[in-house]
Image (cartoon, helix red, strand yellow):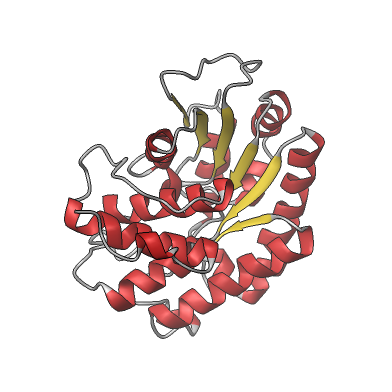
Length: 269
């Protein structure tokens, strides 16, 4: 089984270590850069291109602002990075330690959670180490449970999207349960939209990375998970067609909260 070329591992590890060059900062107008600003919910996103493409941290900040939450967010998400790369990075560990974060969101490389051996050998040890560091820093870990490839991963026994999604979900749920950590079930919402709203494009042409709709969906699942609120309103800066926003937010609420409240059963008029 081949997950990715070894050179990508080295590049990802190097990217994590170079002056936090993959770090992005975003915040609401009412949220300062100061770590002591207690008006802010401070969120650090740790992942790779599934997080950085379309700037999930900024979309989450915008969606949260629509709900009256002042959010300061940073993102460390070099392409191809694994949680193991982040756990081995002194810069990442220092950012966790010194950031006075409310939440730290962890996103694993997209294929690893779908393979049992890779989960056990790579994902779970790194997740345990990062969760320990996050809790020692006084923050709450959140696992960003991702989505499967559009056509699965047939060369590794995952014949289609549904098969790959089931394994990814199992991987994230298993480690979140073990560590008593928060789980943001983005993959569950993704599966619902893919099954019920095929007109909404979630995958880019590569069948892997998210479209703006996919990132908007992820941001709304995170909002519902962290704040226990039903997502409402655009908060997408016009990137997602209004005709799709309600359906994406409904799926996010259903996945994260278990049910859509009656007052959001119909799209706004």
